[in-house]
Length: 372
Ligand code: ADP
Ligand code: MG
Image 1 (cartoon, rainbow, N blue to C red):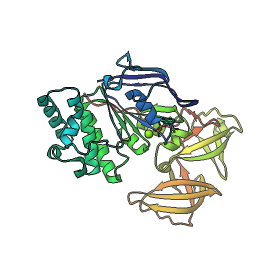
Image 2: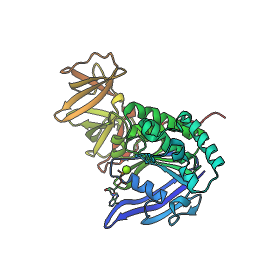
Image 3: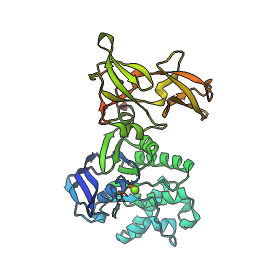
């Protein structure tokens, strides 16, 4: 299995730089997800790793060896695309065996590898069918099977589930995660979908405009986003961002005056200047209906999702906050409500959008360590 190292990787198309110097190590057996909005450079970066796109600057190492100039088929990587790119006239089995046949692998060995991949992917009974006789999810499994039989040093996935409907996406997400556990293969998985990133990744790389905004475990990004971009990109519904101004309170406390309501007290030494503008980030589950809360407003929209209810509360004109309340909460459109904020779980951001680390605010949970 492979360890991949990206050192200052850049890509320019003419005068436009679309990948602007990426440093990253993907460890052996790790499942790393590149996530970011459309056009941020995810596919370009993955294609440079695969060798399908020339690297303009920087160094790409696979197991310590520079591969910038190495042909794609000599890198030992296998890529799975959103468009399955199967040969329609070939059977499932022949599609999966195709690359092996080109590589001159004898028929017996080819068959064995295809059978094994088909078993892992539960495609055993479909090997004689043509791609046209399969569902979208089955076709994507064939595309994955075609990658598996090559026994690559790492798998590269580019939005492989984007063509599938929502329920199938969830099912395939679980299958790919299971496959990763079975094969233990180094994997880079590209998606614009933060839920896929959160559920599948050992580590997430958040990309935006050709740069890395943050690298971390899903919960690190969720609880301790490095900046406003990550704070609002990871998590659905989005983290609430409320503009505020800092001032000193009694006994050395720091208070934040929220525009239109407030103040709230920062639990801990935030080292903020009087009058310093900050953004307060609060996740919807850290706001609750309260008898006499810190902030208040009128309920504009109520969404009943079954297991939870989302209330959208207007604090001031143009300032809406999302509140995750219990499914049976007594809340209706037009209600005036008072809201409590779990201040120890809030995030603070400076005027430059970067997170301010405050000692007493909740730290990300430590990574779970499996028992031996
Ligand atoms: P993502 O996969 O994150 O949606 P891409 O990596 O496909 O984004 O594209 C990143 C940026 O590079 C986009 O602005 C895109 O328009 C540009 N781009 C991609 N391929 C080319 C190309 N062959 N020539 C010029 N610009 C390109
Ligand atoms: Mg893309």
